[in-house]
Image 1: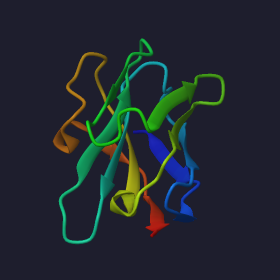
Image 2: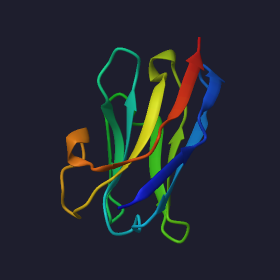
Image 3: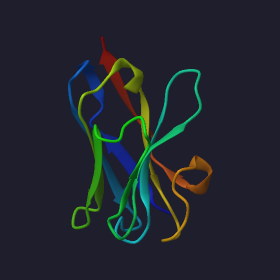
Image 4: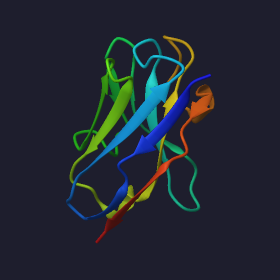
Length: 124
């Protein structure tokens, strides 16, 4: 079982930036897909971005071009750099670890390991 701890959330003005971090233990981020999801109040958890073991990245249409997912295998940490934040980006952001190299990554049901979440609030 992998343990995930997110950090880096906070309050930012519209147009601002934040970088979220997800420190993993128990499994290396280099061996499985890692992803970020988010959940706003009253809404379902939605896919944000994922990075495969190969380094290939995928993004939701709503964040493509503004967010960037990356990983540092030496630190066993995954990052989500967010630029041009908008009020609609306000949500709790969760890090997730997959279990199989070639698994789907856009559905939260495909991930069994989750962090506790970090709140991102974008003020207008």
